[in-house]
Image 1 (cartoon, helix red, strand yellow):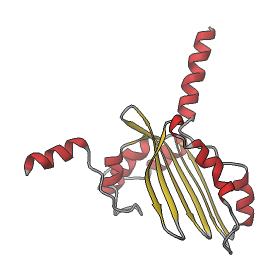
Image 2: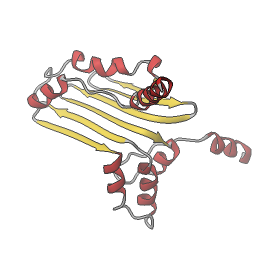
Image 3: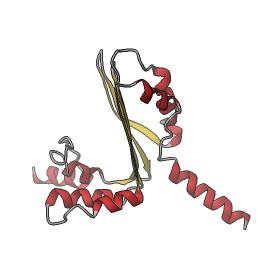
Image 4: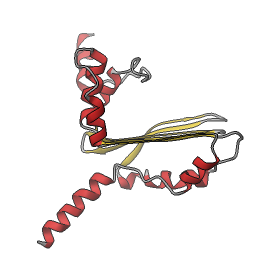
Length: 182
């Protein structure tokens, strides 16, 4: 019986490790912000919402497939009246959860004098099981966490529709086919 309990605990800890814990300071940021967005959709909510997507429409069908296996989508976004209303200390608890030892790796890092954005993936084997976007501007802070299996090629196919930016992601098979065709 103890072995079963340990196995269940390990499985749950792996599944939950994909979900980033938002620090308590985020509640204080929401109170200071002039605009605040707090979205938390669990698996049941995502399944219910996907019923409204038609498989007959290509982009909605793609979105329905993408969302069907997700466990959660969580967004926290804050817009402030002035610069300096949040600090790196507010973001540090998020960054500490994104260490490579926890299975997360940064795949995009975009910096300028006024903006800083990163995209992080959590993989199990070859499968992407979590995605996090962290975007920081002087007056804005946004964190998006998607939990569950994510097909990057499928996500790429949605680019340019449903408010998703167009991004090119090539699978190994597509890449090899393009080389073979040349």
